[in-house]
Every structure is written in structure tokens, then in C-alpha cells.
Length: 111
Length: 120
Image (cartoon, rainbow over all chains, first blue to last red; front, top):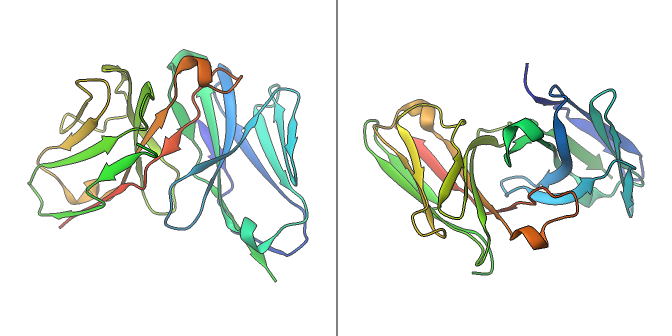
């Protein structure tokens, strides 16, 4: 079993829709959590960190559930420009500073 | 530099040849990471450095892979006796000094554009 798992999708949604992605992790010694965005043929870029109390950045909301070992990303009012792959990233206390990436969830927003 | 620079951007080589991939991180960034990414997959951790010290090399697939960062800045990932299964995008990322990290205390990575390796 992979340490960080995501539904690969693709998620095909119309403009204006709300879409949510989940990411589960298997190591209870989790430390820090992030969502990265990767456009086609480009490098991953940080979208947002995920804090224990949950956090919001405009149309994007990230939540953490340590008990169930998952994080989520909610995108409201989807835009065409949100089409990308969303990567869940976790660090673990017992694995030093390395960041473990999920396989990514592909989102396609259609007009 | 302004961003993370990787070279070459594209490398085509024949099976059995050695290749060296270079990464020039953002100036002043302490940590440097190497990842490998196959099509449709997330980045797979290979190794990382703090300054010149290799902190973790648990992701290197076998002893044909090695990495160094001798002066704590530029890093080289070397693959000896390449095989077709080594074909992938190799990505380097760096993260800043301790006092400029996100409040979570963990690294925030800035990636380079990657080096695409094709082994024939």
C-alpha cells in the first residue's frame, strides 16, 4: 500500500461546480500536509499548506482529519483555469524532511 | 538564481551509458531534493540534501543511482549503466532556510522544470 493515496480521476466538472478531492495516508506519524498543483507538462507548484484547524484561500478550502488520516481539498465555483492535477503531499516525523507525494488527481473543468 | 535550474532539459541516451543530471537551486536554499516522475504519477522521492550532507537516500532505486552536492549548492544526480526503465522526468526542488519556512515547520518546495531522460 502506498503511503499517500489519491483517486486519480479524472474528475470532469462544469464551470461553476464545486468539487472535492480526498487524500489518505497510511503512516500515523504524519507531520505536515500540502496540496500542490501541476499543470500539464509543467512542474508541481505549491497550492496551499494544510493546517490542523483547516484553512481557506479564496475558492480553495483544505481540511485535515488526523483521526481518519485523510486530507481534503474543496474547490468552489470552478474555473476553466483550475484544470490541472492536484497532488497531495505529506511529511512524516519518522522519515525526516522528505515529502511524500500522492499520484495526483486530475481535474478537468469544462465550459 | 531566480528559480531552480535543471540541465539538460532533455537527454536521450543508449542503454548502458552513464548520465549526469544537474540541478542549480535557488540561491541560499538549504535543502535540495531529487524526485522522479513517470507519466500519470506523482513525483517519487529519490534523495535529499541539507547543505552538502545527504540526509536521506532511501528512494534511490539501486546502486546505479547516486547524487552529490559537494559545496552545498549545485547537485548532480548520476545514473550509471542506464536501462530503459530509467526513462522518466527527473525533477529537482529546493527549499529555503529554516527561518523562512512555512509555519508548519516543513519544507515548501520550489521545483525546476525537470530533465526528461529517455533511454533507448
